[in-house]
Length: 81
Image 1 (cartoon, one colour):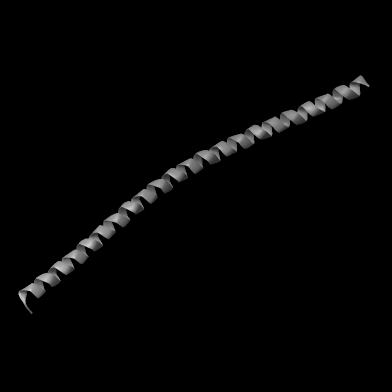
Image 2 (tube, rainbow, N blue to C red; image 1 turned 60 degrees about the horizontal axis):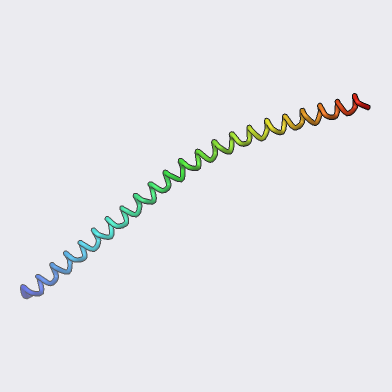
């Protein structure tokens, strides 16, 4: 082979290697962003689950108050009659 053919082959292989390295770096950076987004969403999900639990407790308290008020009203109405 001539020197120019070897040089061309070496440059082609070097170019392919650089393209593969660039693709790996690009995909790795994208993966890091996805992992960060996933962690953020997991944190938000945990906060929302805590809020939901608190809201359910508040709802149970309101329903208990409503039931007690309804019983008191029924008692007051029956006493008035």
